Each structure stands twice: as structure tokens, then as C-alpha cells.
Length: 323
Image 1: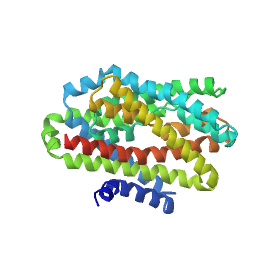
Image 2: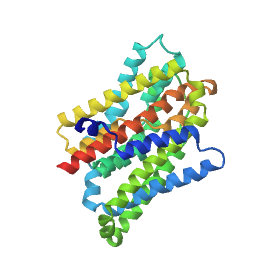
Image 3: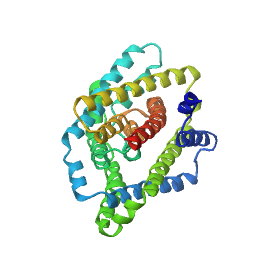
Image 4: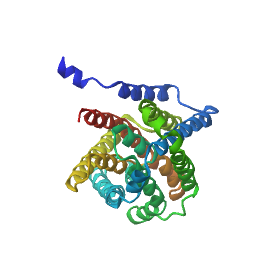
């Protein structure tokens, strides 16, 4: 019985699995898409508003100036990931369609996610302010760094990346965060007492991101474009890549002497790849006929990283509660 109790998934993991199932059977499509996107954006904005109201000025300043952590996250995103991607691509050359192998390498060159990285960091009890800075910096630098890496490692030339991503990050993340912090004298004490509300918003935003992202993948023909063999190979590659990056970021953060809270931030911000940035970048950098195969590995990796990191965040939170 104790063994079975440890193996039993927690309720949030079951909710994630159920969300993926609902998105597969009843994906968000048509007129419902803008509605769900608006609800998801509102939930994320509320999350950042509440974090802004909760965090003190000294904590924000410490997060902004934590350069060792930011360099570690960037090194994982733009150095370690590409090296692992090149290794896996070479190992599986001839076993998979060239377009899918190119897509797998492309996902390794992308910036980190923003919303889910910060939500998982918060859920696990990590350094939220540093996560906001690190994930946002990764996305902003990715506008320049990713096309350069694509040109160097994939022998392609692309145009500029649309600047709307920068504006979206600013309006959806920084504006609510700053607004919440400015209202901290009024709301700070109330938010501190509402830890359950913050946890609900954290988890709710993750479930919404999973549903909308997986719905988009299903509507775009994820299961029609992937055969059983491709699914198995891509799933194995994505799982191996994620396991390697999670293990290496954990070991590196501990070897470099980071605190538990900083380790959580490095693990979650340094292990993610952004579907929101990757799809528009692919449409700019690659021919239209190649975009479908290029983004398929990214869509699959995106789902796996959300599921695995949700379980990992839960375990971090449970260990933190016991200490």
C-alpha cells in the first residue's frame, strides 16, 4: 500500500491528463479560439498582477540583478540545448524524415517559454522575480539569437522576426506586474493572506495554456501528420532531450551553489522551449511547404514539457512544505 500510494498521481497531474484528453476530443476551434485565448491571457495577467502585489521592492531588485542566474538560464537555452540537439540529430540521421530532424534541431534553438516557466516556478516555490526576468530576457534575446543560430547550424537565411512578440510580453506580463506592485500598499496584506487564490491562479493558468496549446496542435493536424513510428521516435527524442536538460540544469545549479529557490528557477526557465515564439519564427525562417514538418517536433515537445514539469513542480512544492 505505501508503494502504491507513492506511485499514485496527484490530482493536478490527473487534471492535466484530462485536459489533454479534452483538447484531443473537443479542441478549441472556430469562434471559440479568441474567447479561450482571451481567458488564458486574462488568467496570466491576473497571475502577474497578484505576484506584483505580493513581492516587496527588495525582492524585485534582487531578482533583477541576479546575473549569475540569468547567464545560467541563457547558457542552457542557447548553448546546451543546441549542443544536445545536434547530438541527437546526428544519432538518428537516417531513422527519421529529414524535415522532422530539422524541426527537432529548430526547437533546440528557440527561446524559453514565459508564462508556463513562471507559473511552474511559482507553483514549486522558486524565485518568481528572477523567473520573470530570466524568461522574459530569453524571449527578447531570442528574437535575434534564434535566427542567427538557425543560419549557422541549419544553413538558412531568414528575415526579421515580427516585433509583436515584444509588445505582447510587455503588455501581458510587465504591465500587470507593475500595476500590482504599485497597488501593493493597498493589496499587499490581503494577497499575502490569499495563498490559496494564488495557487489556484497558478494552476488554472497552466491548465488553460495546456488546453489552448494542445487544441491548436490537434486542429493543425498533429495526429494526422504523425504516423505511429514517427510519434514513438519523436516522443523518445523529446523525452530524452527533456530528461537530459532537466538533469543537467539541476546538477549545474547545485554545483554553482545556487539556493533551492534559484535552482527551481533555473530548472524551469532553462528547460523550456516556446511554442508561441517558435511557430511565427518558423513561418518567417522556412519555406511554407516545410513549416508543417518543422513545427511538429516543437508541438510534441511542448506538450511533454508541460506534463513533466507540472509533476516536477508539484514534487518541489511537496519537498518544500516538508522542510
